Length: 127
Image 1 (cartoon, helix red, strand yellow):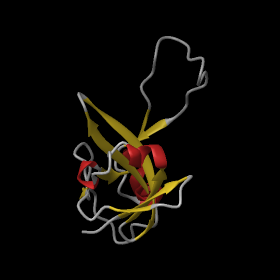
Image 2: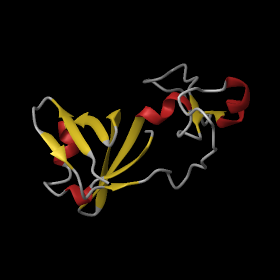
Image 3: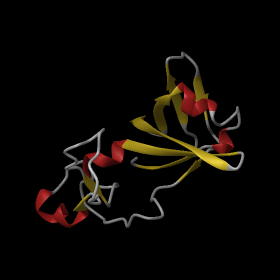
Image 4: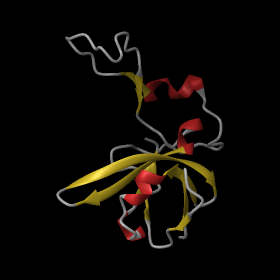
């Protein structure tokens, strides 16, 4: 599989023909649908869960009413990608947007984390 990653704030296109791609994230189950581009609200309500409640106030998001989406391969969630790059003693992560078949648009600093080696980039559905 050949994947092209375009980085924002640069004109360089990175062809990651050796990049690893996953069609399913390891912690998400894949539910088959006939039309992946349409989110069926009636059947997907089990897929949306409230975010973890915290006992302390948040300065950044004081009214945190976000919900975690567990199956990110359905509906409009599959256009967003999670990019994982292992680095010395840890990892770097970022997000990307699917712009075409085997093409991901992301920021330059995410691509720079691969240090010129596209084998270091791992792309998963949704972020």
